[in-house]
Image 1 (cartoon, rainbow, N blue to C red):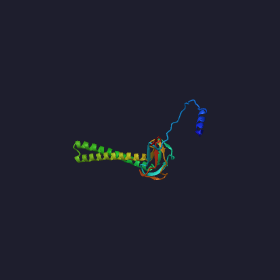
Image 2 (image 1 turned 90 degrees about the horizontal axis):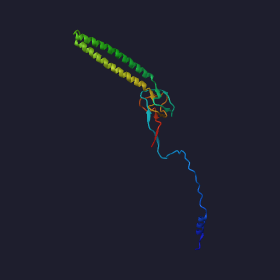
Image 3 (image 1 turned 90 degrees about the vertical axis):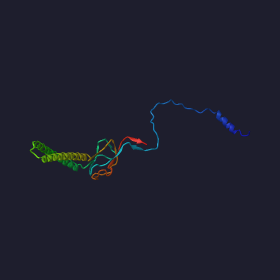
Image 4 (image 1 turned 45 degrees about the horizontal axis):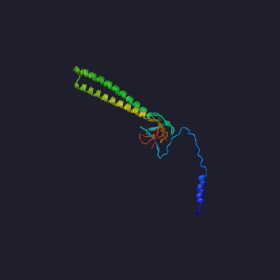
Length: 194
């Protein structure tokens, strides 16, 4: 055996002292858990804010990225034309109530006269038809008033839930149309990760 270099090197390694090992005392502390993953986040609830009535945008009550609480008015569409339509509908309803009252009184008179056989059957039939028509006109006027009040309420675009409002897509003074295009977007704060 001529080459003893390998044996000497291995033997010299074994003859040296063992490696130093350090020991630490265990420490108890809070650790933040985290997860690294590929995916994206999105809002649990998202909605497009759109006009439900036509008109010029009169007010914008938020800045892009603001928090919005449920029921907060975000946009105001000019309410004056809708206030006038509501007043017109209320006046028509009052007129229909007065007409109904008059036709009911006439019906009662004709019914009384017909029971004593002083009035003709035709007069009673006419009074009955007029009373029934007046009732129908009053019902129509009540529906028109309710619709006008609903349209007036639509001049204020409100947040349907708590969230963050995105960049608006309309400007002050711009004409907005019902359901034409979104005016802005509201996203719910809790996010989901997928």
